[in-house]
Image (tube, rainbow, N blue to C red):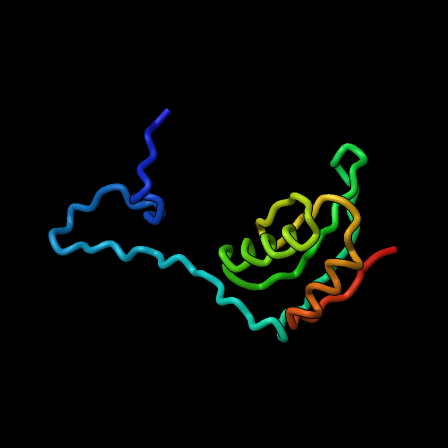
Length: 117
């Protein structure tokens, strides 16, 4: 197995160049800007799939940076008094807390609606 260097991640296919004046153009990592809460359209739903039958409240549709997503997840987890996680644009809150999460999100200024049964 070959070693992978962190600084070489942005080099898509260029290994070596014989040109003396070659300067590789690194791809800029695109970080999506966080929309203001009034422009966010969040969906709050209950999910049980592939979790051993346990229920989680899923908040989906967040548009923004990973740090802002984690901050919102931390706020929801602390207000509900339960655990969970926030990654890939989704916030998971352990248990069925749809009504409480909706109240918190609406109070914070987010457009949130309940999806599913």
